[in-house]
Every structure is written in C-alpha cells, then in structure tokens.
Length: 349
Image (cartoon, rainbow, N blue to C red; front, side, top):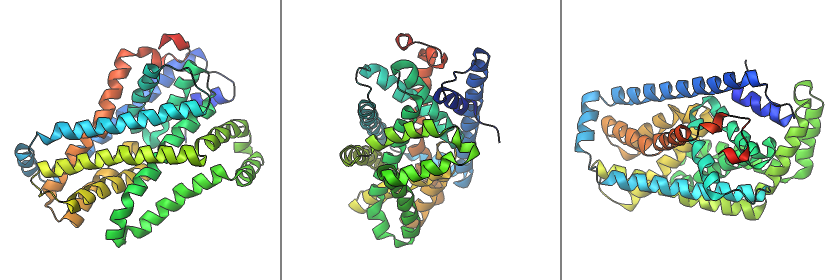
C-alpha cells in the first residue's frame, strides 16, 4: 500500500528530513486527488439517499420543509465550530504555543475542515505541518493536538449518547466497544509505564523503530493534553458544542413536521451523536456513507418515520454540518494559497 503524500510529508518533517522541492507539487496534487475522491463519494452518498427515499418524495419533503428552522440549525453548527476552535487554541497553549495570533489559529482550524473528507482522514496530518511552519511546533506534537481534538470529540459525543443507550439497550454492545477503544487510548497515554512498554516494544520492530523518536514526541504532547484537568475541560467543551449540533438536528426534524417533545429532542441528540461515532470509527472520508446510513436507519427504527422523511432529514443535517464545514474550509483555502507552500515562513499566512 502506498503512503499518502500528505502523510509522507509529516514523516519527513518528524525525521528532520524536509521534503524535496520536486516533491511539493506531487504532495499538493496528491492531497487534491484524495479530496476530490472524498467529494465524489459524498455526491454518491447524497444520490443514494435520494434514491433510498424516492427522488420525488424527497423533493416533496424538501418543498414542505419549514426553512425558517434551517438558519437556526446552521447557527448551532457555527456554535459547535466556535467552541471546538477554542479547544484547539487551548491545546496549542498546552503544548507550548503561546504567541500564535487568534486569527491565524482560527484560519488553520477552519482550513482543516476539508481534510476530514480525505480517506481515513489522513489529510488531517497536514494541520501539523501548517502548525510547524507557522509556530515552530514539532510536527509530532502537532499531530498530538490533532489526535487530541478527535479523541476528546469522541468522548464528548459518547457522553451525549449515554442517555439514548439507556433508553435503547440494543445499542449497548456497540457503545461499550467504542468506550473501551477511546478509554483504552486515554489510559495508555496517561500511564507512563504502559506507554513506555509500547514504545520499547516498537524499538524492536524494524518498521516502527525509525519512528520511535517521533512517537516519543507525540506521546509527550498527548500526555500533557490528556491530564485530568485539560481532559475534563476539553470534553466539557465538546459536550456543549456537539449538543448544539444535536439541537440543530432536532430543529430540522421539527421543520419536517414532527411534533416537539423532550423525547424527540433526546432522540435527535442520541442519533446524531451515535452516528458521528459510527462515521468516525468507519475510517471513511468524513464518515461518508456510514454516518448517513446510521442517521437514516435509526430515524426509521427508533422514530418510526417514513424512509423519505428520514432521507430528507439526513440530507439536511449533513449539509448543515459536514458540508458547511467543508465549504468554509475551501473558502479559506481559496483566500490563503500560501497554506500549500510548505516552505512558507510564519509571516506568510
């Protein structure tokens, strides 16, 4: 299996061997091609939802949708982004980046959104390269920030899904597996003897051995980020931010004619949270396909709504969340081409 060019650039930086000038064009084109494949997959998923719900009936549901609810759903998504940005900037301070302008930090944060739709989200490693070029932060510690973002988000949506799992016990097995995976990673990061054992084991593996210095840097950054106080703050911010998107999903369901109730609001938060986790562990670009199937399927099974209504709700919430973020990120790319000049100095962005 070939190594993605954007991931390769991270490895070169970590090992103190910068990419050759001739490789820069191939890295940019490689990232672009992976992004295009993610966008194509997104189009196919949207088309599949339209066909699943019957194109004519979904069109009718969109025509009947009360669009006054949609701006509020967009606003709650932006609320999610703002809180997650402050968590990102807080993480930068924890790993020693103290003088990075807030506007530059926000630009990098938003520019990272389209990277989520690259295969296995490998492109998100590019954020660590951007941070290194603009702040001097070692790439391995930048990767630790990216991983900490994802892990704290996972723990937050897992917490939000808890009440739903209590009400729908058939989801307990999957919930416990996800809890074990996320909790296991945090335990390894916080128990130094255990982490040292894994690193020592890696030193005896030929393929991993050369990356151990970078992995040690990554571990030191991750250890600081997941100390109890920072972890509780990050997960708390995550719970509030993802709750915002859950409420936005509830508003979309109201716009489709469902009756307001606490039960529907709780169900909306649970479905969106659980589907976000399903999409994350699927390793598909942006969770495409996995998240949509989970949202639509759970709406049909748990809310007992018609397939066309479930498909319409799924389309609307994904446009209000995933595709809004991708669009904002691409807008930043359009106005900040220096992001892809990997040799750029801190002042150039």
